[in-house]
Length: 142
Image (tube, rainbow, N blue to C red):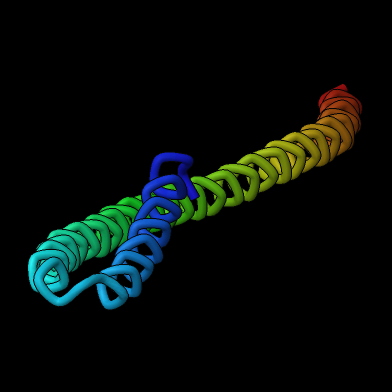
């Protein structure tokens, strides 16, 4: 508890005890003074009750503001958590997309290499066929 509130609470307790003690002392005085002291004790009790009421109203108000503050903080944390979750999902999606692009590039490169190798082999075979065919044609014509 804040030192001011703690001090206020201690003083309220002391004041209550002092009023009770004054009431006891007033009851032991002569009758003519007792009525005057009883009125003063009653006024003190009224003032004390007002002060006590203010103290509790202040505590309730403080509690209300503390609860609002905590609620606001909780809402902010929830919002930030939601935003963080969304960013984590986007990061996961970006990683997945990156790995898919890498796989696609590897697939393309290996596929292109295989095709080029196949084309070279095929073209060499075709060229060999053409050479043989040219040679056959030349042998026939001679």
